Length: 562
Ligand code: C2E
Ligand code: MG
Ligand code: MG
Image 1 (cartoon, rainbow, N blue to C red):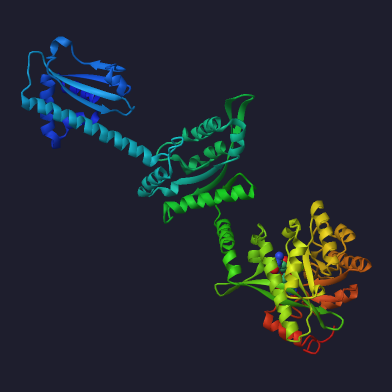
Image 2 (tube, rainbow, N blue to C red):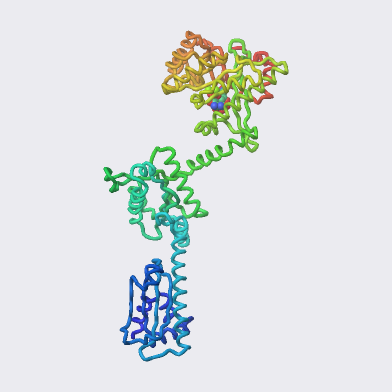
């Protein structure tokens, strides 16, 4: 028999490796000799049983007998059993040729060879299984992140990373699809969607599932646009009751690799962080990597994660910025402003307040600062200092807290501070619902003897309707009015009217950002007699502010009346 034919047969009978062992490998020349001997003197029968019972009943599902029964010596036979990859039991029988009796030595060869075959086969099966398990996820058989790393590793070795893009994507509203179609049908839709992308790829390009509904694509840069075209959304037909077609798309973070990244992770992390920006901001379904954006996000994450510890570690301090009577330059109050001392550095509110405002953390901070204010006031009163009214800033997030007034009262009462010494500073609101809540709150606070001041007044849209309806005690004119102070300016016209309307409604006014004598002149001219700004003092640490409490007259401290 031709060597190649035997080889092919061996491949069929046993496996590729067995034929390699038999013919190709010098390492295994011993086995080769043995096999050839077998083929000269033996005949192989192969039966495949679906399970052990079928084997016991000798009812093979598939049978291959490569000889006619006359050509063998049926009295002699070596049998080997093994479990094959489809889970069936394979039984292999080898007979000597008709009229021949194997010697004991030959029989041992046959047994030995079959043992080798079954061992090699199970080893190959195991290897195939391990290879599969290493590089695929078990749910739907997608490539997994290890495969992505392997492919990226290949590209990196060739120093061609700069030619590739990583797209990290997250499916839009997969849970909605799950409830509409059920899990099984949704899986099919997902496979069709990702399959459309995979069909456009050529190794080492790949699409891998990173977990859940997160996927990563490694693709040549020039193909990115086409892939994004699919990821943005495609219609997929489904077979599910009334629904015949659904649209599926993804939030995508796109990172064009530079080849200078220190690790695979850096590329994938950048793409993932970019995807999260797309998902969280919802400005655009597809975002391209921008380093400053990511830094901001990392900063956000960092601030959020260390906030609790910072509160526990008393890293936040209340600073006090004096409020001054512009007629006599005497201290009339102060605003508590928060500072964060983080790793020995002072961090300003604009670096963390907007981040904390994205969650209820801001409420924790506001109550914390109020607590500090009250404890400082209690200290000053105990030391015989003349206390002044202190305002504390409260985020709009408190509006939804039904116990807001109660919680403020509890803190203030804990220190035995007269309610008239505390001013609640809130910013303007825009929505109708917030306005109604705010109205109620202001009345509740007033009933408890607290004053409420509207911060940054005049920059929102609703300013006028707000003060028309809600009985605030004080209006704080936003700093931006004085920033643009110029008597001919339209802002000045507005400021003038704000002051006059507030006065008609019996609300006091105070201006923020008083920096110059011109500002003071202007404010007085329009009838605003309270100011807060660098002209008098910046926000001061407690110890510095205590000095102001002891010497509350800025004229006596050397400032000329304006
Ligand atoms: P705000 O409540 O409007 O506070 C006034 C801001 O203007 C303060 O900035 C203050 O330092 C600054 N300022 C005062 N006078 C002048 C001036 O003459 N010139 C200039 N250029 N600026 C002046 P700061 O301390 O950086 O606070 C910024 C914002 O952070 C505050 O604006 C407030 O909205 C928020 N904030 C501060 N502390 C807290 C807090 O404990 N809770 C909440 N919710 N927000 C706070
Ligand atoms: Mg304020
Ligand atoms: Mg303000």
